[in-house]
Length: 402
Image 1 (cartoon, rainbow, N blue to C red):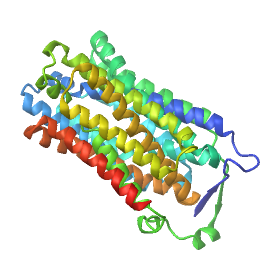
Image 2 (image 1 turned 180 degrees about the horizontal axis):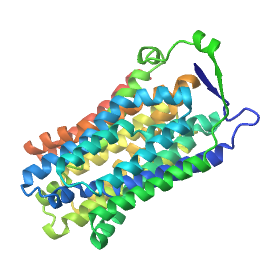
Image 3 (image 1 turned 135 degrees about the vertical axis):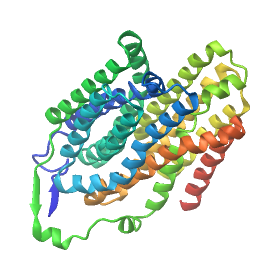
């Protein structure tokens, strides 16, 4: 049974600006709620009775990694279900599952329970990808880049704000109440999608369904350069998330006073996230003046410069400037790839295509901390050198495929 929704340009279609506003704000709230508590998971394990530092690191690593790993497997599945029954229902399902799981985490009594809940969370997560699909399908074709940019900006700004608010809540009321606060935020995002997003009327045609071939990864790879899109998204995510496991240790290694390491690390992460959000937002305007291939090459080269500066180990001021350059390049490259994919893939295949792009992204998200940690155990600087080489390889591959 096929689902065919009215596009943004059809008479009687819902107001795409209203839909974009609802999806963008809900995404911001959801990503803020998620990062309200996850950065403090090691402290939570300590409260649950894990005293050995190595054990805390292991529990934290596997608990943080299991959700994106499971979500990477499930993303194409939920994308197909969304194509059949509507993406609004899928996003609402995902957000409400976070309400239940975040609330449950406030009452756990053992580390394995956190891991189990995070694994279950992976089965139902993925609203970030679905929100991108909803934005792309709601907006008229000329506004697609802007719509995707807005949602990705929200996905960046939420994690920049969440740890600050979460740390304050944890200090004032305890980590368990921070999980409850996260559940409340997710419920707000759920309610906003249910009330604010108006999905186009769904028509089901069994006869048409029989005539339309099923969308598969093999059929998507026929789309020009879709395989390259998958590789670029995976590579960008690998580089983007490589800083987390090593940055505090690297700052200490290059001479940052121990008392200032948390502050400088926090500033670097915030500047990188903020500049990436700016890159997401600016992408639509940049695409009007440059082709997508040239834009991805330029953005990757810009991020390469930032990674090279990091590998030199300069002072805090130069590191913040490098973080700004790095984040800006990553943000522009990400939004450009998703926009071009949305434009080149047929509309009926867009949800599944975004599902596979999300699988590539989440695979990078799950693998990046592991690779970064292994490289960091040999040399902290090697992490940033590898980032620079990876970004240069992305620029080279895009240039070859032009």
